[in-house]
Image (cartoon, rainbow, N blue to C red; front, side):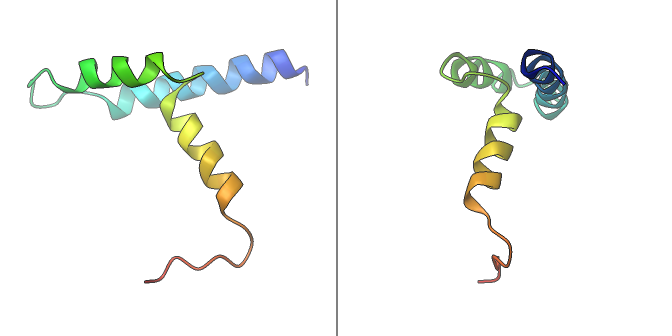
Length: 66
C-alpha cells in the first residue's frame, strides 16, 4: 500500500480514537483546550504518537512488572 495512503488511514483512525478519548463527560471544559495545545506540538493524532513511542521502546521479552 502507498505510504501516503497508509498515513492517511492511520491518521484517520488516530483522530477518531483521540475524539473518543477526549470526550468531556463531566462538561468541565478542560479536556479540549489541553488536547488542542498538545496537538499543535504534535505531527499527528496523540494516541498514534504514543503508540509509536511504545512500539519503539518495547522489545520482545520486555517485562512490565514492578
